[in-house]
Length: 175
Image (cartoon, rainbow, N blue to C red; front, top):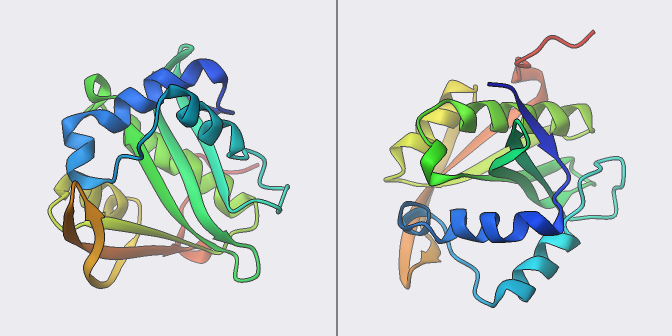
């Protein structure tokens, strides 16, 4: 199964919202409100070309054989400090197949090749699958952020994980 990251298109909006609205996703990440038009505008605002350093948000859709299976994104990109936060979501029916790992690894390849030097992940302390994913990719847990974010009306603790460029071992060797 070959996964590739593509620039989000208007046709991805419904799937992206469905993945985020899934009960498992909602348990560990805040679901933005609004109708489909608001979601479409949000998706359209995200950049996908890291050589354009005017953005604070970049997003790609993971596809397998032309079918969208997830999303990976960089938020709060600080081009002065070459750092950002990574986010990701996998289609519920595609979880447990290794696609999340492939998608995040591909995103890390893009981020570090695009000039970032530190990529952070903020993960709910009870999200074992996501913690395992980032730690398997080399992220180190740097701390506990108590009552860090409100999810489904409740303040939740998060772990802060980070990966430095020099620690990253690309999934596919660069030529």
